[in-house]
Image (cartoon, rainbow, N blue to C red):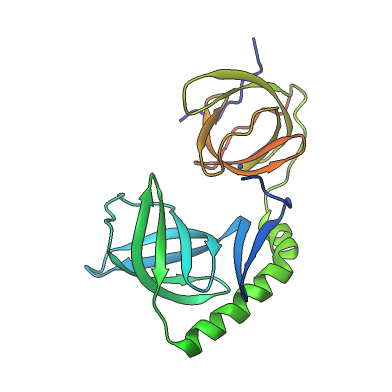
Length: 210
């Protein structure tokens, strides 16, 4: 996949850092910067993953590598940074995302709620720490954004890094949907007033500087 971004010829997120929805006494937290981890199937196969939404009862993941061979009702054990072990059964699969219904004791559930609340309160700091790649504004900021339906739209790159970009556009593709910026595929991670934030599916290596 070419990393070149040619010039033209990620329900909305309520915060650029996170969305935390209150449901009873349980926070349902969506992170702009997903937590890295690994998960294992019952056959012993392991995959890298990223956790992008979590509550006391469910967790939503993106598979970071490996074959997409998951099936509904698969039993999964995952180890996620800042959260530790999560265990449950797959209840939904969509593209490279899947949802897990968590299985744990009342004691484990209470510990998880505490961790989720901590993440919710510290999500802004966490997002800043995880944004390790320097962002800059390219001199040629106009580009073409292609949606999943194949339609092409002129847009403006507000800032760009090896891992993602902020794009000025009036479009609001669904969160987690796949778009193409120039020749590089990306996933929509957030909406904001001026446009969308995207994360490249493959780390870029030759971003244009001029």
